[in-house]
Length: 143
Image 1: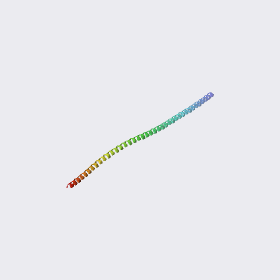
Image 2 (image 1 turned 135 degrees about the vertical axis):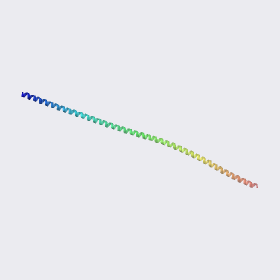
Image 3 (image 1 turned 30 degrees about the horizontal axis):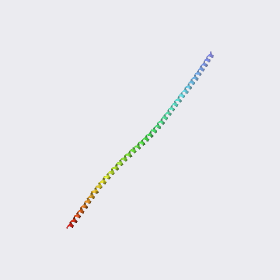
Image 4 (image 1 turned 90 degrees about the horizontal axis):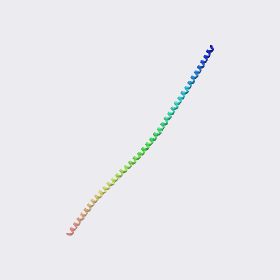
């Protein structure tokens, strides 16, 4: 009977040892599984962070390109506006010059007309003076 009890105790000890070994192996497998899961999650997080960084870089590049295009368009529009302004200033200047020439021409005509009136008056006065002198001389000669 002692031998049976000893064999039973030995079998129980062996079973306990096997249970403990199985529990230890299961715990190690669970730890490895958790470590693998954690590594996978960290890799996914790193991949997500990389994707976010790449997207930010791409958005930045796109925004800089769009800003450059806006600046170029603005320069072109400013250039076009400058050309339109210059053309308008040219038209205004030509109109002012034309009006000035017309005014100068009108003033010249008025001056010429006035000089003509003055000259005709002077000629008429000289003619009247000569006619008066001729009349006086004729009168003296007839006396």
